Length: 315
Ligand code: FAD
Image (cartoon, rainbow, N blue to C red; front, side):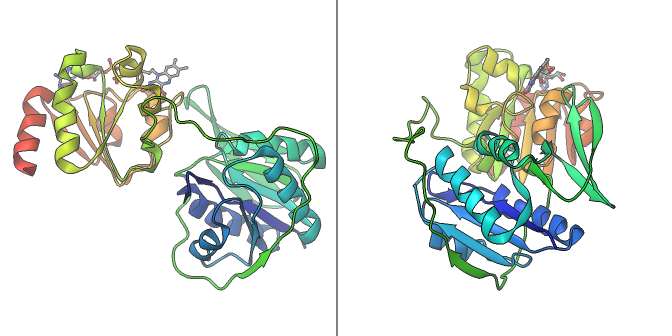
């Protein structure tokens, strides 16, 4: 029997959505290799996190109380401890800045094949992982022999686990190495108060807005409906909005309930970051804009007419 260790993620005191998606992916893997799913909750308010993450499919939740925020040493040591306790042979973690920090180190230590940024997988004698390449232009499959592997998954690609489970909760003591880097604190980048990857509704603005002064138009819509403002890359490259607002391959992956793309063409690099949105609304003058291929609702029209009309309607 081979078990799976999935590692939940939290930031600034809150669990990230991908933690629930990880349970779904981890359960699928555990079923495939005929093992248990162990969920690691490391650092921060672990008791509260464990209670929230007790969803169907999780066999055991291991809480590791060391540390507040992400800390490479704590995560690596904690997962090593769990691998020894559970005899798990597979690790699954979010494909995030944190995940990409400690998972490769673990894969190296344990000689595990590592596949990053998975968007899907199948198991039949061995694991076949789907991932994207060349700016999401190409989809590839990677065959992993055996049932020992490390995997990081992209947020928004698996359904979040719902409901209440009956996992056993165990507190784990971890011996931390004497030396090595320590996290001393957390400093937000300027304008970094907003995490677009956690927003429920996004109004996203693209080059169709033409001028920085015109951002008022979309800001008013966002304010009226209680949405967060995000953008395509040219808006960020122009310095009109900070980098943490950029959606896409070189920005953030977002999975809101509603994504309103205003004056955005729908380039593959942009779509890579928002195609997991529940409902996509696109406003564009060009009826052939690729964004309409993935939109649930499309409005062919000039944003300078359509957006104020929407604001008036919502008000
Ligand atoms: P455009 O493609 O110029 O589209 C503007 C749209 O606005 C057009 O469809 C037009 O019809 C419409 N429009 C114009 N006027 C109006 C109006 N008055 N009313 C309504 N609609 C109007 N892009 C990202 O967004 N995120 C990324 O992370 C990203 N990463 C990249 C990484 C790499 C390696 C590369 C090469 C590119 C990357 N890009 C990224 C850039 C991407 O290829 C596109 O250039 C970019 O997404 C285009 O942004 P846009 O849709 O705002 O602009």
